[in-house]
Length: 94
Ligand SMILES: [Zn+2]
Image (cartoon, rainbow, N blue to C red; front, top):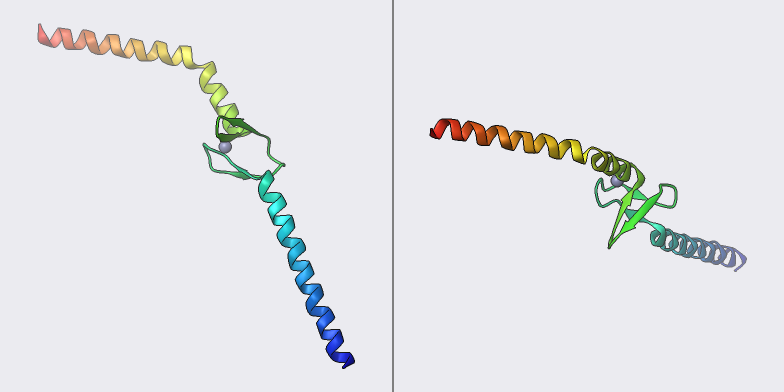
């Protein structure tokens, strides 16, 4: 009888431990976000920003900032390319 009691105690402890783990996992899931761009899953460790419905991590934000910073340059390049193409096309049609 005593042995059985002992076994029961161990089982109950195991179940209680499992429930604690579940509660912990649930709690962690609330803090968990997936980066919209690179798909990294972050807990509170990695800084993330919410943009609309999506979350984006600091690494991707830095990359985006770089793109924004060079956007003027890029647009200039694109317009040069466009002009060059236009000139070429006009040259061919003439
Ligand atoms: Zn990211």
